[in-house]
Length: 233
Image 1 (spheres, rainbow, N blue to C red):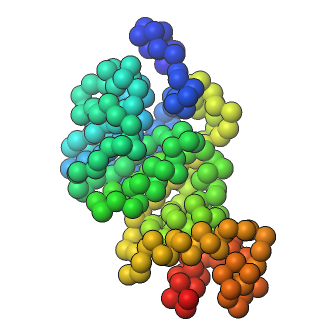
Image 2: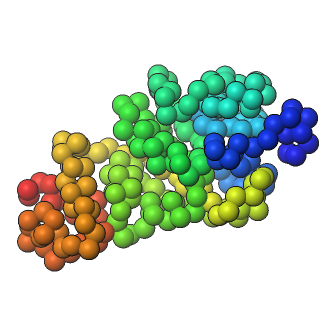
Image 3: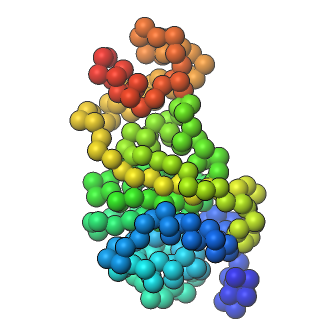
């Protein structure tokens, strides 16, 4: 890894959250979680130096790699490469799986983008910071957790040590698997307006925030609880 970076005179960009995965056992966990088939199309965000990209290309029909850093995009071969910010990428493909190693600053926006678009991925296998993963799956709700669980089933596949990356980040990571599901037939915008209002002051009871008969706080409610509140409003 260091030799490749030195050869092409590339220094990891901290602003872009570039920490390259070096642990092959973690690669295997990502690949296994994605349940790859020979006729799959994989959209990979943040391929970096292409360590995972190469393994994906061996196993599936097509890999589309979205890399914002042109220095790294120019190094990728054997796959379709798009040198673009993933948040600005217009998803025109259907029947695909999303795999990504996401820096902290982009994790939530990327998850939200791909859960809200019409042509959602079949599944997502994502590397995110450990604390972000725990917030998403935690039974104690947050707007992030409710937002993900409204659209999908989610689980933590494995925790990943910061020692598995170069340069070594300050915190550990986690592999999460997100599988989109059918959502309730309700006004999604209005539903999330209700959720945001409920979380507007975490320490207040919902009866104060939403003027309803409840002694619970927003973080104590499940997605189904919020749906019930929405339908009773």
